[in-house]
Length: 75
Image (cartoon, rainbow, N blue to C red; front, side, top):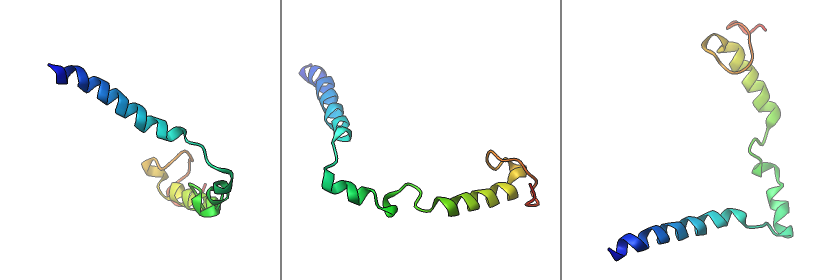
């Protein structure tokens, strides 16, 4: 019976501790490392855009992405 009362409190405490880790701040000297090109979600956006364009023009008949066009590569 005691375990039934303690378990929800421990679970709530664990969720609170894990959730608070996302609220940590970044020190000024660490921001330079995060601003590097390698740390970006998309390190080469121009190449990704070209690849997405080629993919959508080839796969448009299968519902590729948001662009329209034929499967032949012509838009």
